[in-house]
Image 1 (spheres, rainbow, N blue to C red):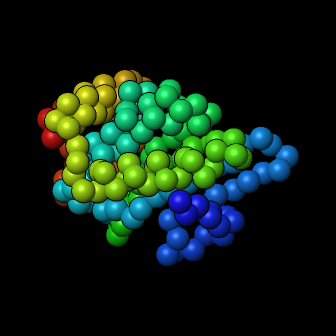
Image 2 (image 1 turned 90 degrees about the vertical axis):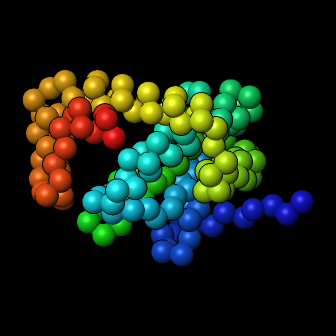
Length: 169
């Protein structure tokens, strides 16, 4: 069984696993990510569903494996961002130093599962429901509306969507 040897935190375009071990703290931060689609891509909503399935809530397969069943991580975050020419999706965890070599293969296996389309309809429906709920709860203040419409006006002015239109998609 060959161990994965993470490299020190030196950002390089061709590397996808970044690990930072802080000897003064009993955790190692792991970031695993891939490049994705630009802001205007029609695939952006599907990418948001993939993000939710990957690590958007407590019930995802990956979180249950890492946290609930394995006790391998302290915390996690999964986020995407899209720019005019490209985007990214990143999964970040904090794990005990001794668990790094256990955690990375599990995360990579989940990325591979999602990349091959091995996703249950139930996972998609739960992720969509979570996303819709997030849209409605994150649009409660005036600043939220400015952010919602402002980003669209800035990055995709020919296709500005209302909250309801985005939910329908």
